[in-house]
Amino acid sequence: MSFMQRLSTFRHSFRFRLLLQLALLTAATTAAFTLFYVSHEISVYRSQLQREAQLLADQLAFNAKLPLFAEDRHALTHLIEDAQQRFPVRMLSIANNNGVILAAVGDPQVGKESDDIALSVMVTAGDREYAPEALLLGKPPASDEGQAIGRVSVVLETSGLRTRIRNLVAVSVVIGLCFWLVVSTLGYLLLERVTKSFNLLMEGVKEIERGDLTTRIPVMSDDEPGRAAKAINGLAEGLQRREEENLRLQQERDSALRLEVQTEKKQIMARLIQTNKMTSLGLLASCMSHEINNPNATIGLSTHYLSLAWRDALPLLKRSAEEEGDFSLGGIPFSESEHEVMGCVDKIHANSKRIAQVVQDLRNYSLGMDSEFTPGIDVNALVASALTILRCYNRLSDSNLSVDTPPELPRITGNQQQLEQVVVNLLMNAQQALPKGKGNVRLETAYDETANQVTISVVDDGEGIAEEVRSRLLEPFVSTRISDGGSGLGLYISNFIVSEHKGCLEFQSEVGKGTTVTIRLPAASPPIFHLSS
Image (cartoon, rainbow, N blue to C red; front, side):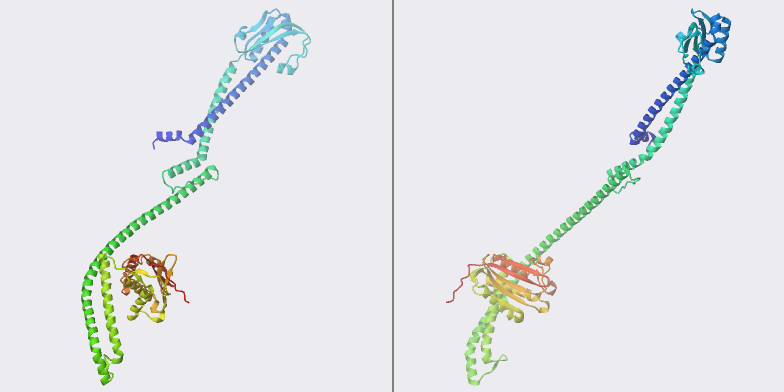
């Protein structure tokens, strides 16, 4: 910064305004004091000259009585010349009572046109005494007795007064100027010290205004500027914390947005992958249905042929048993295997039909075709059929299963085989949820009169389902047992089937305490209760 810039900055500063006011006040005070001092000194000096003039006039009037009465000009001249040597006299004159000047020194007319001190005293004849105090102080005599015989006129020289006034003014101005300079310098140093806190305060405020909230103003003292600095430091600290908090929130928001975008991107990619999987699964299901139907048709035909062959061979086997006695057939006595073989044939035929129906449902689902619904389905019978299927494959142990199916439930409309598959899936999930296969599973059916719905509930006291998994249970390929061979499609397909029946699946689970899954299906009609007689 150049000198002119610093000077311009100083001229617009608070310190300069205070210094200017102090300098003007000091100059005015000094000038007033100088004027008062000079005026006082002039007045004192002029009063002193007047007293001298009075003393001189009184002495001449006293000493000039006899010479004046005798009109002795030589004696009067000697008196005034002697007085001229002792006093700075411009003019002295002694005149008789008729106004005739008997002795004079200087121009008698000078006192009339000059500012010099002029004094005139009457000379009287008589017993008029003057005390020394009267002569020194210029007081009149105690009495005015006596006859006037003349007049003494005195005009004192004032050139010394003017010289003294000039010197006095010059000295006063020099002293006043020095005093003003000293006071202004001391005032500047004092103001610099006093306004240092204000300058630091303003510099700190400017830094904060520029956006540097880390600036802290030094606290020089515990006065108003110091308290203002503390307040501004507290404000800057609060603004800094708020800015840091805003920056942190902005970073968190940006991170959340990036995470949300990444999550959404992953979800979109997952949906695309799932869509591709489902498309592939549909194509695979169509191909598998063809591949499964062919051997299943052969199984059906073979079962039908085996059934006919068993019916034709049964009379011959009975006759042989009657004639020759009981014999072993397949390691089992004929008397026992007679019904077992036919039961096995019927089970093979029933399961072959079931395989054909499941394949057809899977094909319809993959092709988007509606399944065939039939009215009047008995929910308790549906549940019993699902339990029979599981028991045939030893998937349930009667020791840990309890069933509560109250009679007289209303009928529903739907596909029995699909609903049996849903119940089978839920029971298998409940069995797998038991720790090491130990625990209890409860199957219940009920009627909700308020919603006019039939409910099927599967309750287990297994491991439970975590919250983050529970919210995604109905998505495809989501399973807690993927590593154990789970496909993640059981609940997805079950939910789809229940939704097609205008119902819903409800989950209630607590980790470590168990899970309750409820199927809600709309009832075709309210139940009819029979009154016993």
